[in-house]
Image (cartoon, rainbow, N blue to C red):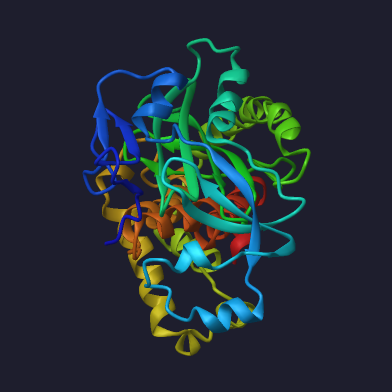
Amino acid sequence: MAHHLNYNEQTDKYSFFTVKEKAWHKLGQVIEDYPTSAEAIIHAGLDYTVEKRPLFTLNGADLAQFRNPDADDYFDQIQPDILVPDYFANVRTDTEDVLGLVGKDYTIVQNIDAFSFFDSIVGGGDGVLYETAGALGKGERIFITAKLPDYIRVGREDCIEKYLFLTTSHDGYGSIMAAFTPIRVVCQNTLNAALKHHTNCIKIRHTSSAQDRLKQAHQLVGISNLLANELEEVFNHWARIPITDNLVKRLVQIAMAPNKETLQHLHSDQQDQLSTMYNNVVSNVMEYALSSPTQQDESTRGTLYGAYNAVTGYFQNVRNYKDDETKFKCIMEGIGAQRSQTAFNLCLEFAQSGAGSIN
């Protein structure tokens, strides 16, 4: 499985750190104590800056005369005398690697600004704990994971930690994304649930106002606290609602349906029209729901809360991915997030209306 972590030849280190536990193919730095933001950015190898530099091309005569770029004097003799208007190269200053091509309105958000976002949440205090951070590729994409204080508690045994993820890029693709994600301690199962009337994610485009908006993004903590309180109430309610295995399977079938045609077959009981791939996915989710050790405590086993965790747990612990980056994208904003949200909505309806809501 590929890891895509940046390897810095100058420091002979991978650009990644984690606290206490090895991760990402056992690469990077493992540290024992939670670092400050100033320490975290160094441990993660993110202490570099990015510059936006103009692009040039050659005139026709020079290009025709010097066709061999391997010649020793190639770059000394050619003259980059034609400016490419409105386009720039984002260059990593410590390695001189080109990370991407961007337009004139693109504004760089430096790595240190991403950490400053987290620090501003608690005024630089001890409330936020930096748990992982790193860079991918040549350093064009970075990510940070920070743990917030306290837990969401479900029943007597299940604790859900509150995390903020932030990812941004220097390659001209994608937005700055900050997201609230609760994670079950028992199995590191990303729940990634958002209630219908709230969002667990803020996206900021790389425009001239990006840094100002990043400073204002501490509203995500308010959203996180609101979501945490509501999720704790919802999950504890679900943990007291029994559900049969047959109804769990029905909920899973609907939540994992890839298209409207599949839903139509389900509602018309045309089970023979369902694809083998889809049936295998449903079977894998059900196997996790009924046999995983993390599904056996009193708040989870045979409860609506356990049915929801079966869907989210499949994407975190069962499904295969080609690499960790693909897994992250799936769970945070891809199919995993979509199916988990569908399962969340189905559980809400079940809690309100009973079994008839999913038949």
